[in-house]
Image (tube, rainbow, N blue to C red; front, side, top):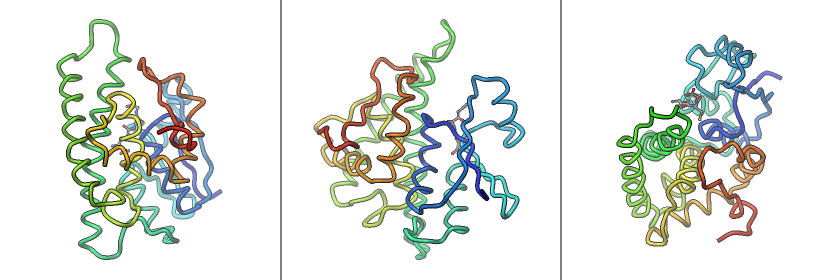
Length: 229
Ligand SMILES: N[C@@H](CCC(=O)N[C@@H](CS)C(=O)NCC(=O)O)C(=O)O
């Protein structure tokens, strides 16, 4: 198969790219990377020396593409079948890129900070940084709630790259810091994301790995199955 995706089913940045592949129905060979296994980690470092997942290898072009936003733009360029996840209009595309950055920087990264702190050796925790991350998530929820009062998807009426970034970021963020009932528009947006078939599929595939999620609260995908509220 021309495309290979190096990824892990639990990893939120990997979900971001899987959503686009499933939206566009692009075939690829999945290669699961286990960074805890020295052999798997060493093999992945040969593909992408920074060893950050995911990485896409395109046998047709001979390119290795890393950094999820760039991977998503690459998929738009090379697999321009519908749905288009980046609008042709430059101004609208700028909005999509802005919200992609917003969800990566202000939802995904604080969520990762909170989760990965649990994996640090005893005595090496960053309590202050984790508190800041919780605060940043709460601020981001306020912004998202205001935005989603008038929008269906992150950047407007059409599902886009920004929603690929938002879905796993908000899903895991909501697990570590629940979006309260006071942020009903943000909650409804997360529900829409979880019921989008591409992301539901990602979540169902990730579920067997949720036992490895290192927080007391485990992710819950009942909304994706249509059984939660
Ligand atoms: N900016 C990168 C971040 C990728 C990233 O942080 N991936 C995580 C998985 S969600 C990872 O590889 N973590 C392993 C590590 O940091 O050692 C991107 O957008 O691709």
